[in-house]
Every structure is written in structure tokens, then in C-alpha cells.
Length: 211
Image (tube, rainbow, N blue to C red; front, side, top):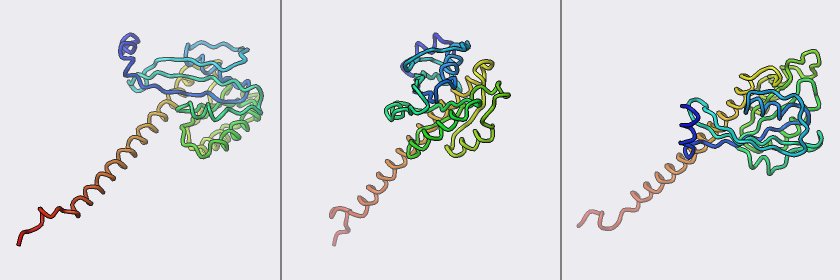
């Protein structure tokens, strides 16, 4: 299916809202722009959040992404609950060269521990191994704690792995939606079944045998 076909069927697109969250300087914008344009721009000097829309095929299904590139002012500036409630999925980003950015994600995770929103963790700048402060194993352990996917990538050199990251958070969101719909259907069918049993038990007088 080409882009023109996708636009003609825009009303049938599944919309997925992703908030890209991480400490300052971890490469959130670089990752987002890599996914959106396949280009890499090393330096960004934005002072506010950016919001982008992008259409793409995921598993042959047309998806309309809305990506929120958050912009914390410092490592003490955590995302608001408004952002968490807005998003369908959260892309957590840290830099392997900055342990403080890894700790930042741990703090966010503790704030949303009661939420069932899908999360995917991305370790950026894996090309800078000589400056590594966070091991791959630590990232994998954090992902297990959050029960989510995990990848190490480098926005500076890789296009395909960055795209996979956004695809995986999308798949997690769609899977969560299917699970929610299935649970709702089961509850509805369970309720109807209970009502049917009550109706059978409470037969009307006209259904009783005559003398």
C-alpha cells in the first residue's frame, strides 16, 4: 500500500500517541527526527515540547503516529501526569554515557508504577562505547522491572533500529488495546450469561405445568 492509498483511507487509520521521555541531552529529538525523516541532526536547541504526526505501515496496518517530544529543563524536571494521561505509550530514553539519565527513568517509573500504559526503553548513543556509564545488562534489568521491551541504538548512525523502536511501542499499544477490548467483551458476555440464568430460574406462571 502506498502513501496515497493510506491518505485516502485516513479515516481508517489507527492513531497511536507516543510521548518520548528522558533527561535533557539523551537524544530524544534526534531519535524522533530519525524516525520521521531518516535524517540525523546532531544539535538541537529547542526550549519547548515538539509534536509531530507521521503515517506509516506497521504489520501491513496503516498507523497515524502523534509523537510528543518532551523537553525537561533539568534532570529534576519530571514529566507531568497530564503527559502520561495523554499518551497511549511511553518511549523512555536514556544515554549509555550518562548514568544520571538512567536514574531519571527509574524515578519516572516509580511515579507511574500503578499505571498499565505500555512502555519501551531505548538506550541511545551506543556508538560511544568508550564513554559508557550504563551497561547493557542494567538496561535489560530495568526493562524487566517495567515489563517492557528494550533496545540499544544510536540515532547518529542507525536508521532501521530506530524505526524498530517506534514500531515496537506501537505494537505494544495495539496489543494493550486488543487485550482491553477482549476483557470488556468477556465482562459483557459474562453479564449477559448471568442475566440469562436469572431469567431461566424465574419462569413466569404461564410456563408452569397446568393442573
